[in-house]
Length: 112
Image: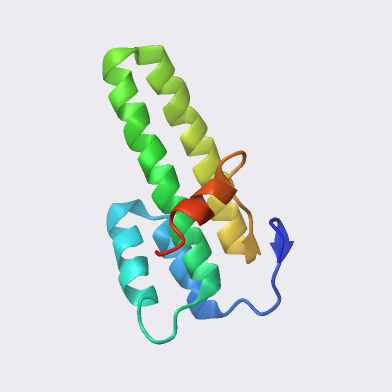
């Protein structure tokens, strides 16, 4: 399946896990733990990997804010916009990769 394509076979469990992964670090951990059972859902795994990469970008934005305030703010606002797009994709049952670096997240975190 390519990015931005709706999967008619997305299970409600996978969709729920993908949405929960977007809800704070605790939500991401809950989704990760629930998805590491015998019934691992690929849709949920996709968004768990996306959110791991996005959370790393958010941490980098916070660190940059302490050094170069405006650059950090831009990174954080960009991450927020991407988070909203990602949440919309998960809610709609579409695998929407994060713009520019989403495919890299899938490759880097393929073991998650």
